[in-house]
Length: 134
View (cartoon, rainbow, N blue to C red):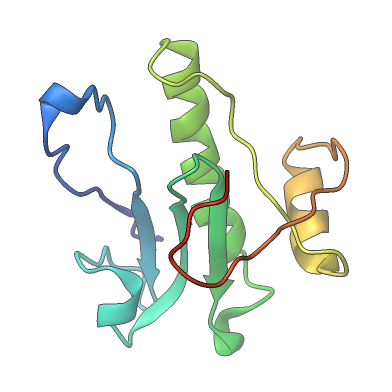
């Protein structure tokens, strides 16, 4: 059996209107045991994924020795299901979505097989410095 663990930080300041955590970790250990640590703190994870601050699904990763064994699909499906359920309950504005880098065929194939569909291309802009743009 595959262990699955959901980790979420405390909601924090409820006065700010936060209704859900900004990230959740679903982790699967190599032995199929639930792991109560974020990915960076453990060396025994097979796969992990998180919800990014903007609400997208991201950072899906399976360690090389566990690729093509279904671990990535397990954590991706678990997080997508949780986010979809929150959307259906009215706790989340958007249904689950993700951004996949052009050429990342493995991720594109995985998410397409789970029912996700491409909605177009996105361009990311990065700015240096602390000066806000007006």
